[in-house]
Image (cartoon, chains in turn cyan, purple):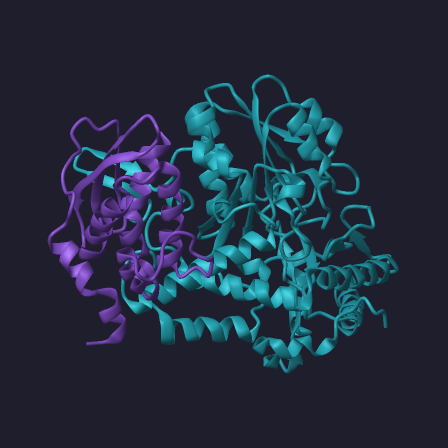
Length: 408
Length: 144
């Protein structure tokens, strides 16, 4: 098999693969929803709680020092992971969703008034739609939606045509969670030329591609820990330092203040300014370990591995005349959405579950896109470091069985 | 008593903490700044009289804080008085390197220096801010 593939014993790094699903080996094709966790992440989290745990950034005692160092060390790892300029540009949140809400609300408060415009796309995840809908309802902000092409990529000409004097910011997926297509970084150039801000939603991209926010030159970048082999409950917001300094605080609470009196408050410097309350410190630490894990394999190698799996699966699926694939391009970065003729995605998912195969069926939190594609739901397979070619063979075999089973 | 603590609370620190020198405000000061440590709420106010040749003719501080922060402020005023701003800034860098445990070579401070007494802070990372609060306040007063 191709050299691009990772060694299949990588599964040993993950305890979950010792589990049988109805006596079958688990084939986990749902990494785009959430990645499985390497043992090292789980063990290190245990060790943190057992041996080092206390609150961060407040106490003077040894455990507080250890916790703070572990927490801040993770921030450095995240900074390096996406090549940010400074630790101050990395804000820990509870999820990518919270990161997007943070930007939407503080950005609107600082820079927008009624009638100002935001550009999204029709294929955004609900988490990059609904926070902006709130602004539309509350403040009369106008939302415009970029169209996509046949491949499932942002139509940059259409995107560009939506920008006018009232446009203030665009917020666009970096890698589609339905098509597996990557948004051309030209989009940032367009925003620079037209002098609007841009946020990229990197939830899918961060686990599969090398992210370089300085090269991308976006103003904000968000991703979640749980899709990058880290724990749930941790998200990241990257923002250019001068912009984050200019935006107002998001939530109020402990840790984000400089000084509080009974009638006034001044705020802490970055990144503390956006980290009100006790942060998800162990989760942040776990994300740092997950990043170490990915680096130990090599992001480049992960990319090649998943590309190889995607290419192979796409080729095999195209040979099946009863399979319809969404997005007609060949660029499927670890994600392939499809339907079997006349069989609902939920039937496919249940049938494959019995074969030990975990895949996603539904609207993928992209109902507007599903409407555009004129489907209610699709099935979706997505790959991670632990998948291999053999599993794709089993999957293709299962699709055939599924078609025969539901044959009228 | 633990050695780390002995290092942290050397006699000179306890002395300056309880009986700070140059406490108050300089008469006719022409530079000043307020500083505080958001982690504990300690505050300091530093005033300076800097002459035309950029020499610190007088420097005083006032405020509330722990023994480390008060002693550090007190020792700072003793050290920086009659120094040029250029020398003072070098001492500032030396001192912050010293308490952070940085391996950078010190340029003006030596082990004989009274400020060296604060080296024990490096073993208590959460106290570095206590030791440097007055220094950063000095810095912002002279950077205005």
